[in-house]
Image (cartoon, rainbow, N blue to C red; front, top):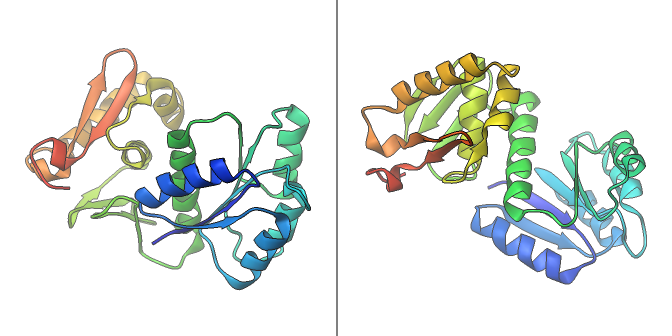
Length: 230
């Protein structure tokens, strides 16, 4: 189970994020201030850190810099009400991997956490396969294999990026522009990849399916919603 550290001094935000992420299969720890966050980082290993900039003691940039002294190189997502370009740049220079501003969508935050965790594990070289937050799904690191309910689907690079992005938010629309960005903006390539992914899912209802929302994008429908039991 992937472990997430949420660092924010707003108890309502912490409660909502913890409940949602726990329901998605993450183990979540909370820190309401910098001192608690640093103490947790010294004793525990996390797969992703979600970090507010404005805290009652230390600022998030300082905590990020401290966390970057850890050889684990845990992905860090800033989540802040500071939306200036300077703040974003400062966050990235401090070692942040992503920066979101408040207010935000909890679904988008979850997708970004998922993406950061997947990306970091793809490059850490420790396992041949990594788990998805969704049960019965695993991803191959080097050979671009997506395993759904034990069925291995071998993907091209573009197919792998598209399918894993769709799997990050099952049942939810992923905009066409976001998917196009994965294939250098080529609509023909996106269409071809979706067609190939569908062919690899076809013939087994438990693998789920890809639906097209005309003019908007695509979404992955899990097997439980398409006749199977993912």
